Image (tube, rainbow, N blue to C red; front, side):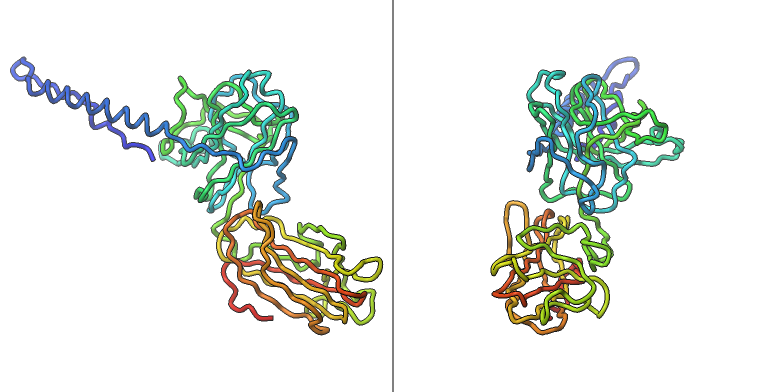
Length: 412
């Protein structure tokens, strides 16, 4: 929030009466001057108040790849070629990346190595920001830099300069920040060293990052418009956000396994396998996918696996807040069936058991819905298949779908 303009005070209250100055007018003028100074001071103090974010994760030499995370926008957050050792005190906007309607819950950036050699400081402040293009009738919209951008949100972060290979920084935003379709990611360097790793290209079709000079240390203020008329760098900076889109068409994650494992990852002593026909062991496992066709996944429980061995497969981060419906089909046929467990998994909170199915359920695919409330965006859903006492214990999974909203029913 920014204090309203006090332009209505910017006029002369002094009036002449037959060439003489009114004493009353002088007193009024003095009072208004004092009020104006007071308002200006309050506005200055208010606009200087900015929220500081503490890093939720620092990974020296780490990386954040957009392809691995749904609903991530910006650029891959990796170590690139250079940083800005001087003349960096500017506001920057990544005009190539437009955000959808939604709520940002995380900023990521990569701090280059060797920054301390240029700055001499152990930490450097950076303002991470969201900018919104504002159209006006009196400007030519053929060039983005001739169109004003309004600063709609910002927070201050401080990054360390001590990591030899640089570091990936992640910052969570408590409660999130709402953005509109077309908003852009931006940042402002408070001094002349720009620590965010980037790469420059002389290609005319290169990624464009617009900038504007920060005049006399007057940093931009939320709610005000600015022209990015200084120019742009054909460059890609390692900065990105994760957000929860407003419209997901109801589906957050879906996988039929017909085209692979759909960015799901596996752990455990048994790996799930994909198949379209009967599993190798007799009298256990599915003979086809759910519905009689297509791929499914299963754990093979023959030797050398031993009782208690297990396979786990999990979704990527759902990047969603609120009630969801986890829907899937399972097949648990065989006299040695162990168990199928379903968990929600959040950073720092470990596994939360949602469902446990134990023992044989018949030679048939069965459907299951689970309603889950997600209160952390970085949450995954995990399926764990555990081997029973013998080789006739193959467990199958198919047609996983996670949707926005509670399930209409939870039965098999």
